[in-house]
Image 1 (tube, rainbow, N blue to C red):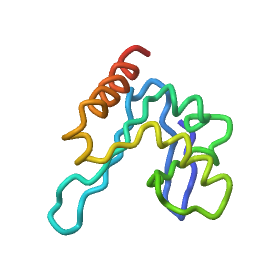
Image 2 (cartoon, rainbow, N blue to C red):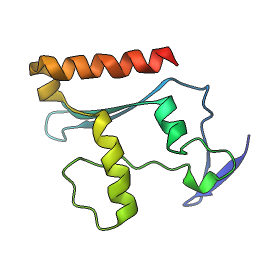
Image 3 (cartoon, one colour):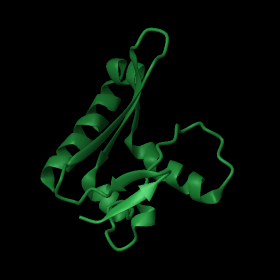
Image 4 (tube, rainbow, N blue to C red):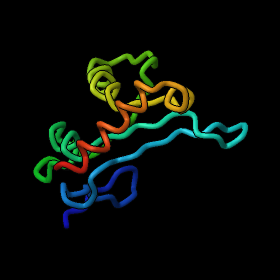
Length: 112
């Protein structure tokens, strides 16, 4: 495998067959409860070039909150596509439509 160094730390890109779904979570610092999460299918990461072995500099992924104010266009572009995969925990618990959207992303990740 090809390794790159980010901030002095050795890293490597995941390949498209290592997992089906990337899950990112934010937890409340006050009570350790789940605040929000991102569910991003591997096919989306491939589409966005996040597993591109030929260009390791694009390997990094920063998850942005949908309401964050970002200064650069490239970060706003990342934020825009990520919104589809973002879930607030409270809304997910209480909104049937959000649970259906959640289930569709899980099903999409299994279908690939």
